[in-house]
Picture 1 (cartoon, one colour):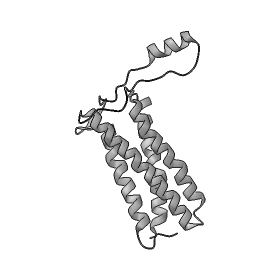
Picture 2 (cartoon, rainbow, N blue to C red):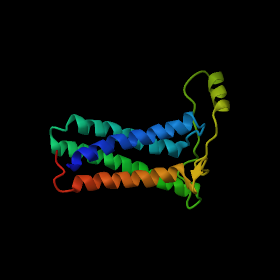
Picture 3 (tube, one colour):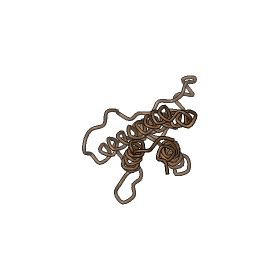
Picture 4 (cartoon, rainbow, N blue to C red):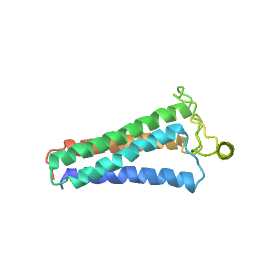
Length: 161
């Protein structure tokens, strides 16, 4: 079995699944993201078009592998942000931001209403955890593992396809 197609599939499916999970927790579970949660999402959002480019260029194995690697790098960056965020939640170190939310544009009355209705979500408090690991921690662990696996698949001999 050739490993480039598997790496490409992982580079597309993994960030899509992570984003789907994040949005499910947000819209179905009522867990609103803080600013650092969004940073993690942005990295996964960047990985998806890179992986799609890898699929579009699959006829050119080297270029496809490059875009797959870039998607894997984006996934790894998301994981690194997740591990940093988990450290902030556990109180191991200070965060980089006050984790405030900003409302969308509109009149001053609309803005005030949006501010008053916006849930306050702090970056240093984990709203959910399983077995003592927060969502940010799981993102860090899973994304880091996925990025390493994608890289390992790309570096495997005979990975061209």
